[in-house]
Image (cartoon, rainbow, N blue to C red; front, side):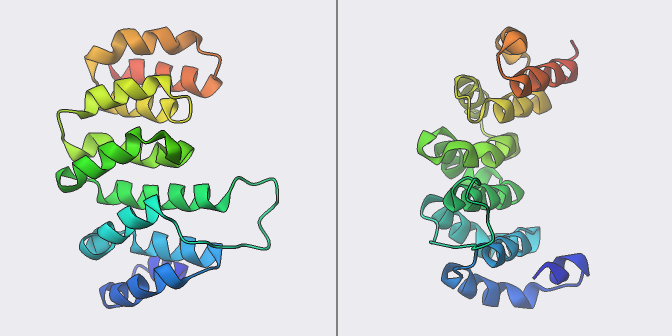
Length: 182
């Protein structure tokens, strides 16, 4: 799979085949590789609905080589699919991405979706991102997205995070404020 991406060849004809196989794959590294191979603009129309479904209900996959100390495979799958949804993000799936971003049941896997929210060009995005500043699992991503948007309405809230216990939150707050011209 990875060679399709690495060789930079045109593989549009392979998209329907990959789409049929993705829900059937039970080996985590192969599943991840297919998702990454489908996470390209030319596969958007076909892959986007499947990615939305699989993010919510990921298949059962295994990787016997995955360390027992790693997080759950389901979380990892969602993160990879969320990354693909970030590639596909746009106004046509704003409702779905906003809903997934706010659904705490998906934990840290939402981070890639949260990062992509500014690309949906939806008026709800600043308020959604501001509400996520209180959610430690995705707060760094929400701060980064607000910074990329240069959303001045978030300045006070982000300044308040400069003393957050999380180093990642503090670092993202500094970067966001710098982008906003602080």
